[in-house]
Length: 445
Image (cartoon, rainbow, N blue to C red):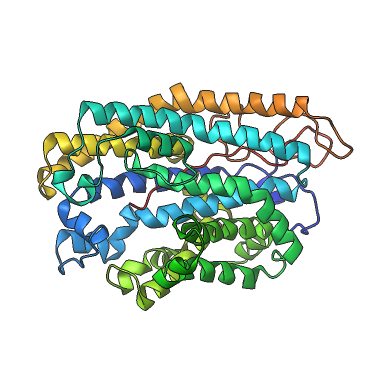
């Protein structure tokens, strides 16, 4: 069955098990964020830009790097903010099915099997691709900066990157964020139960600021050093709350859409959300301290607003445009393969400044998209199909208990669905309450 826009705009009580349509606009938001990531990493190749992000050196006023870092133009290359958008999106879309049908032991085990296949197979394919490029164009640490941080690969790097759980190397640096996507995927059922037990979905107006506060505190050195196993738990405390923000937005999606339906003038809200998102570099120099913490808090508020505007506000229509949807469907592949291509190209041409790299980078974008399209067809799409088969097999192998879902599946915002938008159903239709959704995470460095 299909859900009309009119139906979607209707306020539905939290306890209702209404059908939910696919949010195509969130696919589009993924595509836009993925393209921003490509631009961000292309800029990091330039030594003057690398000095800002790697060495925390404030740019001189009115230089090209200053315009791209300390003005609203940074929206076009806001790499770190794209990470936050992706994390909020994952929290949002993974929570939606649980609002329709609570998880069972059977569905949860099947979810884990599907999720592992869905995430790891594309990652392993990307690792082989990155390794091939690194062997064809040897990494050169002597060039310094961000480009020089890409070291020659070692067997240890490959093992670490393949596992993901305990950090990654710079063979394909975007994989660092998959560490937290995997951890969130593993802990998401527990986080959902925690939200229910604490009734955080009812006091979301207070819970979201608490999550923002936890993520901000985790960035202070004193807090990080005080945590046990800080090499793992510090970043976990920083990033898992960002996923949690997306989960709470999913709980409140109907209220958000109801509030959006009453708005008559949108441009101040859109401009405000965008400005808040990039506020860290607009109000504070590189580094971390009190001013930067304020900027980070504002940035998380902006990111949450952008996600809300994408599914309930005026951003929905442009994000559903066909070219944006094309990029959104392939955003995971774009994310996985773009950085090794940029690094290899920069090493071949020998970058020393803005020229001639700027022209090369512009020409490199269609190359990245073409290779990402091939990767999507050859690796990502088959991994989606295999993950679904794995889920069915696991569900079929487990004993059914009363209340468990029958073998079957539904996907929300999952790429590779050539049969059109799918919906959740509140009737007896087969469904896995914990879906296997796309995860497109972007590295911040």
